[in-house]
Length: 403
Image (cartoon, rainbow, N blue to C red; front, side, top):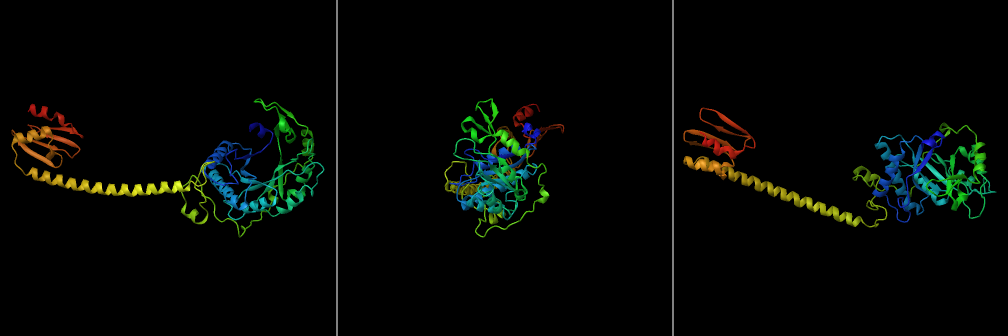
């Protein structure tokens, strides 16, 4: 990243990875994906040339099914960046240039900006050799996004063709950076930077596939360099961008899956969440919500039983304490022989557990205060020995023997 920064190259980071992406066939927004995405953000946010994060790239599936999950990912990543105090790095999505993706793109940018994408990348790899502005679909694409409410750019341009040989002449670069497109599109990213020898026709450089990654320029490199050198050096400033805030379509999903790592938010639950699935890790069964409900029910029953047991225990403790207090009071009123008190003191009889027992033994007054923080022995001559709590009553016989 430091080498790229020295060359004034900025990086768009894809948060997904194989096995860690929203699956269009079974869309979920779960804890496994959340942890993967936030880990990448933690690693890449420190670089000043990180200019954005993608929560997904051309996810195939029903637009109505997947759009809410994509937007939930955008919402939670924007919240995460803000909560960590990171710089305000944009979060967006990349979609293919086709009719179904246009519907997703419109939904992702409408309404509440706190859950909407900050930018949209568009994948169009249809400009091949001998194509032009119209035959490549660039004209229709530019028209479709002419009033899009957030910045757009070509997240992937070039030529993907089954034809062998060179199929790219980079003539599209002149159009991408022409004023007819820069009023709508903010440049683009060429597909792709490097490739292995097995797919060499798609990379500006090729590598040998080994750990040392010996690289060499592909046959496209010089042509690409020549075309980029002719791009106007004056960028199209953000001051020229006029956003067009839009309301969401009437049939758009109005609720989003919840944040998978936070407890339910009552406010958001009422207006901005759904529960199509419980948080799951990638690849887990789609119907594990029944298990989660059973666990919650078990915890609730356990709490009720535990509370009942605690109340009953408290009542028994209070009842027992009152009985012992009454017993001690009755005992303190009884006149006992001196040797009886002495034996009880030595053996710590039950009547000594609560209250205060006082007796005269051979003209010497002894007092044991068991419930207090100290035990006091009043000796002949008025001296008093203090034992810090808990008192070591095992020393009592020796003290008595020395009197």
